[in-house]
Length: 234
Image (cartoon, rainbow, N blue to C red; front, top):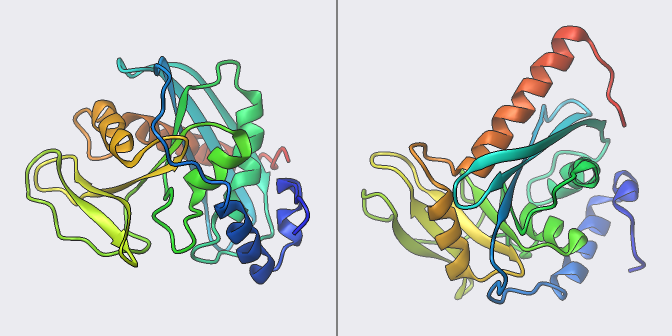
């Protein structure tokens, strides 16, 4: 398949999107990150599956202090349908526009979604990491695919996540008496490092600070635009 710009994702059929995922899968690099992490980014998307407006946000924090140093947001539109396993095609174009607005690029990105813990190993974190050539981690609130044993009800208890006899991530209990999160490497970071980084980013909430703060950012932008009836920028 020829190179397809994210700006053209709206023109893809579901089968073409799957074919692109299979092609991108060959480029994934799940090896240990060998640079120090000074800044970490968190990204999230907010949208209604029945609407075309997409709210994307990225926040940059000092690592490991978790002090915000930069944030950007974008309101865009997409016509790519809401299809499980292909949500990146709705989300990536807006996230890339936000990424291009950043003054401070992070050493690693955490995205609210899957990395390789995806049937075709192409969750949003992997897709984003490949297109930006940036180390990336997926930290999802729910499982998309794979099997696991429920981790113990202790903070930072964990268990491996498998799909077709391949380890694709880690099920991590970040807080007592809370559902676990699903951590998987996206690109240019190992499974073990992904979990260690998410642990370092976790404070008193179930969700690690980068994606928790990005979630608050996009929700604020969504409320602001709806209240003021501001049209999308892209």
